[in-house]
Length: 362
Image (tube, rainbow, N blue to C red; front, side, top):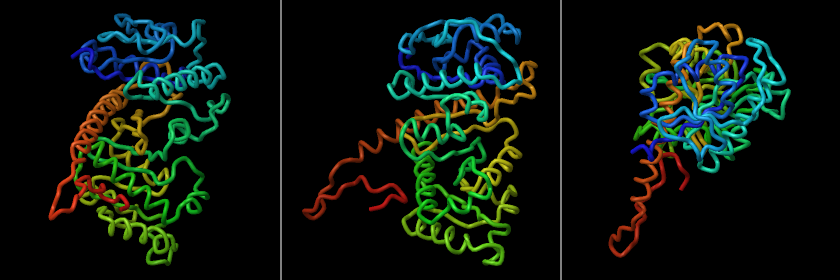
């Protein structure tokens, strides 16, 4: 049982933010180690320094040099650097950016090698990360580039899932990035992840409009008529239960949004604002659409409260257990799909029972 425990890789994020604090608080209860094996990519000096600041003196770390050495029942820390670290809570520093980048790179390499099973990333400061080789607007774009594939950011908790059609873009660039084929691929990707990662057999997807009042029949914009409606119709015709476009200003009443398994928002604030309002601090970011599993807490580095011992670990805890749940669901889905690859002979004709997933092209 212990040897089969899932290895959860954890990147430390910006050490001048609340990342290490929420990692420590999420792992302080020893009973949590019965469920998975944590592998933190950073240094024991960094973890011990912040452990003492936040009064978590009973915590102990198992220093290792590679994730394969991880010991079940221990908080394993892969030592990526030996030198002492300088922490300046709430301040962007080149040293902090370098540590965040080193941690993320090492964790990704281990994920690709299979040395860890899933990855949970503590928050970074995107502006500070530009000091290093990180030339992406966020984790999603970086992971798409590093791991291959087309990532779709999904914000989720127990009662709400919102995917973003575009990620960290200026509002002026959103409309030019949208077209029918892009939206069709995103609807299909969202449908696939709901089936294989969340065990929803026939998911219902709501698609939001881009313009106020979903364009008001073309009065306030044509994108709903020329792009979004055709994408929804063609997706529906291929077996995906996609509906809309809905006006975002009135959609998030409990009666309406709870009728769907997921929502596709057109841009960052259209999805993030209602998600954070409804879920408070308990949300999780999941980078769907990739062959690897990565989750993160829904909050950022939160410089304003860094070092004050007030950061709450609930979102990070949720990110850990959501990654484990998705990992198990996906393994079961792959297993079931493999068992379906059997030929059935009907009237002398072999029929492949592994039919396309809802929305997949035939």
